Length: 317
Image (cartoon, rainbow, N blue to C red):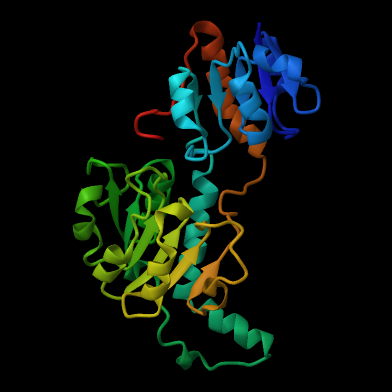
């Protein structure tokens, strides 16, 4: 018998399937402090209760399955020291995030800011005044992160006949990309690009990766999109780039500080689209989680391993 602490109230999860595997389920509502040490599996991470389970005297925790793809918010060093298996939800959000990125690009490419502003004023603008609109096949894309989300985005972009360049740690080839470069060769990857998309996890190597040096290298790039982690971007450097000739537009779903402070100039910049970290939202999330959790749970009950999405504790993702 394994004891699972379920840190979500999502009603779509197949709890009967968990129990059929021999799992006893605790929730935030049912668990007591005396139960903390008995928890062997934790699904999700909520600091107030998760830290108590992790540090309980005689803690039995063996496996942590997250709701998210990124794991930078976890106490990875502590989990590693305790030899706790960590797995993530990488791949679950590929479809909603990649489609949202297309929305961001089309928002600027089809001059929606002007269209919406005109509509609010009931002003009809003659179509010849939209001479600066572009189509997605006009744009060369560089995607930092060639995993599930990056590959799905690249697949969609190929249907728009766009050129797609990928960047990953080693420069290895990846599905749906025309070219790939190592992260250390980022200058080659963005030298002639129009759209830059960040989907990288947040690690020591990617913290403030997009800094003044990065943005100063750009030659009037059309659009910068961040759906990865806010900490990968030096916000001050980004704002400076948007005020200069280095960067024309930005679409930002994640930020160094969330919620984005009302004092941030990003709210008022006409060439910036701000969204509230919502790009991963999707219907039937619980069913999507179960497609990863159930096979992992079945495998864990057999031999203490997981079938997919095990986090490399050295790399941090």
